[in-house]
Each structure stands twice: as C-alpha cells, then as structure tokens.
Image 1 (tube, rainbow, N blue to C red):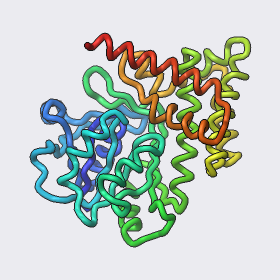
Image 2: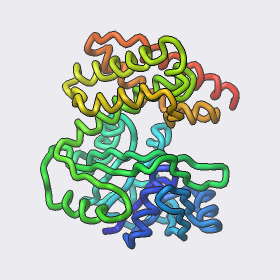
Image 3: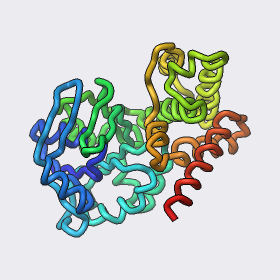
Image 4: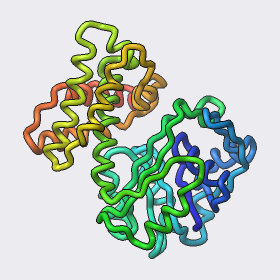
Length: 309
C-alpha cells in the first residue's frame, strides 16, 4: 500500500521512518525547507531501540500526482487546516486517513473535508521531540499505534491497514472501539498537560511539594469526570495507571505541551484542554483546575502572538 505521511515531525517522522525501514512504500509530504533538510541530512532518529538514518522519499503539495492508499496525518492542531489543503490531491475514493492528532475535534474537521468514509480513528503512543538539528529524539521506549473503523466494524480495508502497519518495528493494535481509545488517551494527555503546565514542572517536582500529589490527582479526576459525562468513562485499570504515573516522586516526566511551553512555542491548548473544558461545561461539570490551565495557556498564546507582531 502507498503511504503518505503528512508531516515529518516528531511523531509522523518517527513512525514513517520505522515503516520505511521495514520496507513499506512511504512518502513524506513536507514543506520545501524540510524537504531540503531531509534530502541533505536524511531522516534521523535517536532511539532506545537503536538509532536510524535513512534517505526518505519526500514530496511537496504541488508535486502530488494522485491518490495514496493510506494517509498518516501527524501535524499539530494549529497546522491542520493547511495540512488538509496540502494533502487534498492525495485523497481518492479508497483513501484511508489515519490521524495521530490529539483530542477528537479534528475528526469532525476531516469528515467535513473528506467525508465519513475516508476518516479512521487513531491513537499513537510515543514520546518524541525534534532537537535543534532536526533529529527525532525518542524519550522513552514506548511506541504504539492503535487504529480502527469509527463504526467498530472489522472491514477488509482495516485488515489491510493492519497488515501494512504490523511487524514494522513498533507495537500495533486493531481496535473495535477506537473512539473509546481516543477518549482514554485524551483524558491522559489532558491530565498530564494540565498538571505540568499549570503547576510548572515535571511530575516528580510536583509530588515533592505539599499538596502536589493531591492537586495532580484532582486534575485527573476532573478530566475523567468529563469523559464519563460524555459517555466515555475511562476504564478503571487505565485510570489507576495514570494515577500511579502522576504520583511518582522521582519522575522526570513532562507533557509535550509543557515542553512546547518551555521552548516558547505554540501549545495545543484549545484542542487538548479547551475542547475538553467545553464538553464539561455542556454537561455542567465543574473543572476549576482545567479552567485555570486553559486561561493560563491562552494568556501565554496571546503573549507569543504579540511578540511576533
């Protein structure tokens, strides 16, 4: 199957490189500057699973000549509208769009652009970052993708996708309840994003101060309460894992949102936290920590916009 990876950043670049390394037919849709960098330096990964450098196939939006079988969409929420325009010529009647974006709001945006049939549900678990040299640095060994039809059906095309993504150097899971899986991840990343951004440090530093652990656990409870009210209660075993991770005293873990904040980069406040808060308001769920973090990050977003203008 022909795979188009939209964005060769920390997530799409990682999984796309692993697929290419495993012999899959992978092309990266990138901006001209990133194409030039990749053609010069290669796509480079620093990983606990072994470092990798490969010469990827790249294409820019003006060079797309026809549809692809799979589009692996991995961009930040603020880049979604432009990505939709760029990848539109690559979407045909049989194209499957697998999305690695956070939250669920992007699903409606993609369905509006390409129709119900094209859009799969998807979840990725990987902790990666781009360094100053454009290398993808994997911060923990975890790397997994979950995918499925949003209807829950096991269709011939989702089996084909499963075969294409399996045995490519990362863990895979074909889900019959992908929307629940997306909500479970949303609760997780919202909780850790809320904790680290609002409280201003890694998990271990939060737990090292008086009332830190209690506040972290309250953040999780707020996010989980909203999911439950929306009909997607987080399974208790998953919730216990999140609570355990949030309670580790020596943890250096930070959210990607916190790392973006530290870099002075834009953060996905509205899609990860703001949209969840809106769902809470719709169900009369009080979430004071979530609300406070949304305000804090929106003030930050406005400040970086002002500095640029």
